[in-house]
Amino acid sequence: MERKGSVIGLNAEKIAEYKRLHAAVWPDVLKMISACNIRNYSIFLKEPENLLFSYFEYHGSDFAADMAKMAADPTTQDWWAVCMPCQNPLSTRKEGEWWAEMEEVFHHD
Image (cartoon, rainbow, N blue to C red):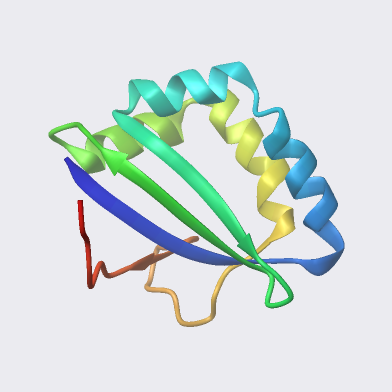
């Protein structure tokens, strides 16, 4: 199992919409998340900075393949199309990232 954390900005005028969307995530999106071996997935919002922090645990054996499977799913693509306009990616993110990946520097079970 691998723990993943990432961060992205949230446009202030889209906070209510983003919360509304995530209060009722489309069932097929949730099924795809599970099919791609992601468990214990949470997104947290820090205001007034309007930062979203994402945490999940990956239980598969090929993260890149599972993320490609998710990205190829038409329903997930539609979901991202409604969520992405709410988000404001960090200027310091790495090439190819939307959400900026974070290094885990501490963990305690």
